[in-house]
Amino acid sequence: MRIPPSSFRAFAEEYAKLFDKDGNRPDQLGDRGLEYRNLVGLPGGSSSPLAKELVEVSRENGDKLDFAKGKGGDPDARAVAFVMDTRTHPFYLGELYHQFHDGFNWGEDYPNEYNGITKKLVKSNLLADAGCPNGMLGVGIAGL
Image 1 (cartoon, helix red, strand yellow):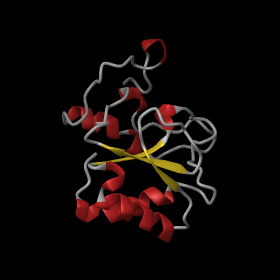
Image 2: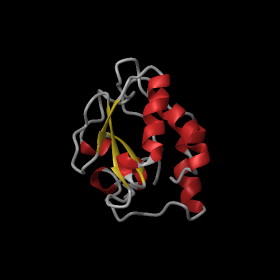
Image 3: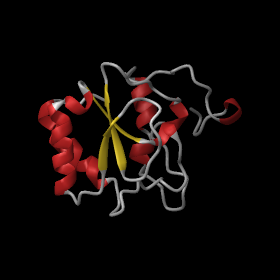
Image 4: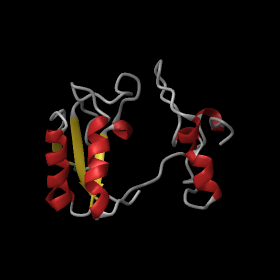
């Protein structure tokens, strides 16, 4: 996703709201590992003016996170968000079946509008198959 700098503060506010008072994500107990780490990619990484804004907004919203310079291969650490330089660490799309699905823990059910985003993006050619296996044993979720 690309966010215009003029909208970055609003994004940062929503991002800060994702974490509880201890800096946990809603999926922190079930989804773990490098692929689940808290990460924000910015051109210039931690030297971007947007990184400073991200930290400011986080402080304004309860200061639940620490921020660290992402290097690649960073751990999935509670209450730490890694800021990656998108020039040296570009975004790679994961498996289609893993985009916009419900969480795996009890009560992590998201609205149908959210769950349907993958199909809409594929249909409009904004999201494409990344060549990853489609779920366990090649079977995705909800027919994707």
